[in-house]
Amino acid sequence: MERMLATPADAEIVLKLYELRTEAVMRQARAWITGEFWPTTAEEFFAVAENPADPHNAWFRQVITYWEMAAAMVLHGAVSAELFVDSNGEGFFLLAKFAPILEAIREKNPTFLSKTSDLISRFSMAAQRYEAILKHVDAIRSSRNSK
Image (spheres, rainbow, N blue to C red):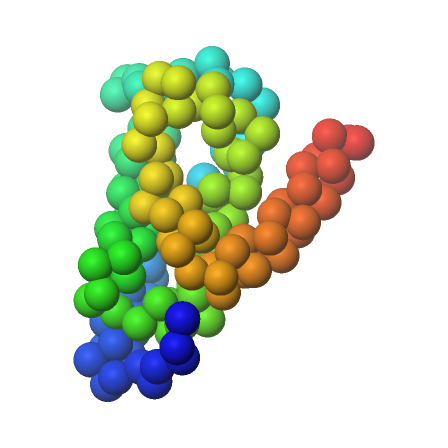
């Protein structure tokens, strides 16, 4: 794919995405899903993801849908893929985090993080960023498991 310069409109979208991530509840939700929620089975995953009575269900949905919406903007050409990938890693982090149980999750929810997966399939820079983040997440997982 030919490298294209991002436009000022692309930059505005990326900055708006950043601004939305700083909202107080979103920060709490992101802190929980990236730091505390480490399911090891699809059952543990769905105990939160499909349970509206779980206090973290709303946070889960908020973060996942946020990153899928952001990925969809890239896939539909609303924002530069290169700028997005250079500026955002958390969506890739989440995909890497759930990678060990992703197949089991998708048996029940085939579209889970599908837009983020599509980014990785479509854009080599996204695939490279994901692979680097996957190594980092695997190291975190190993560290957590050794405690």
